[in-house]
Length: 247
Image: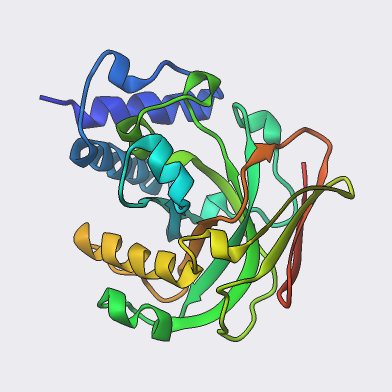
């Protein structure tokens, strides 16, 4: 039997202590179903400390990443209000942070089926996600990363815009004014709307629904890059403006 709460506690304490740990599966093998149970237990620990659910983040949204990890579906994690960065991220509270550009959706009403996910969108924006695996060297198996809430750490979004076609939005990630990644939203499953529908499907499968006010981060449009201290980060999306953060 897998002790879900013990594994969740190990990950939670690693994050709070800013301490990298070995992969959980090295000593306790477990499958994907158990991994999501660990993820939910970890989120419940955060909720008991006063955090509120704020949305969903999607992972493995590129075909190349799916092949690399040997999977045929995306993964997901949960966002809380304390993960939302207003204007700065304290990287001293993170183990080995990385940043990537994102497409963000604002949910306007409860989503009862994957088919109605797009019609429930109240706004779209350019965003970023700061990843921070709790595992040493940022290396993990599929169950490990799911248990670790899909490496979620921090996120931010720019100004919200009315819903529109986001199937091929050019994205630019700059650090200290220097372009470090460029890409297109088409890298997100060919169209980030597919990732949005997958978020609704996975949430419903877990007995949850995308809620009004939640944010869905559709997935990475480029590779993530290390996020250094004392840096200025800007992500720009064609027609969506930009979002900035300092560390």
